[in-house]
Image (cartoon, rainbow, N blue to C red; front, side):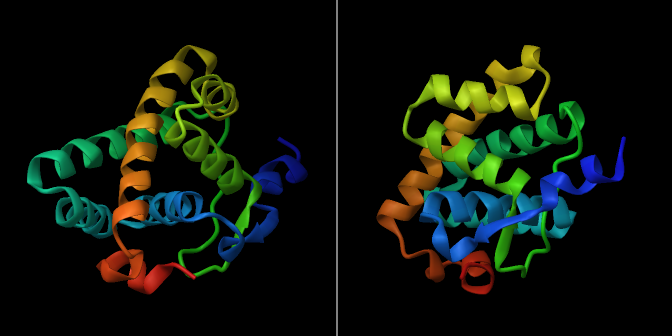
Length: 157
């Protein structure tokens, strides 16, 4: 790969504060999940607080499968900014739009974006996982103030 290809996905394209809550939360959770196992446990606790033990586990499982699919079957590495960074990069923008479309039930649009993230044969699986996660984020943002939950009070702008 050329040096420009390696960093292109990390190029800053905007600020988290410019995104709607679903998209900014999707980026935050992606950053957290990639950070550490402890952060992954914190995500699971967030979902359990909001949705209860059973549904929270289902959402956690969907999100974990979504992230693993992106990491293990990505067309290339998904570039991310640091957890505390107020801006977001091109790859994170793609991920946020992908989750946003999926949360709206715009399956064809979500599938098209999924094909840019993973190999085409995995895109349908990724899009289905994104819909489950996106709908959960839609529920969270419509019912709760995100600052009421531990992860969000520290990370969202």
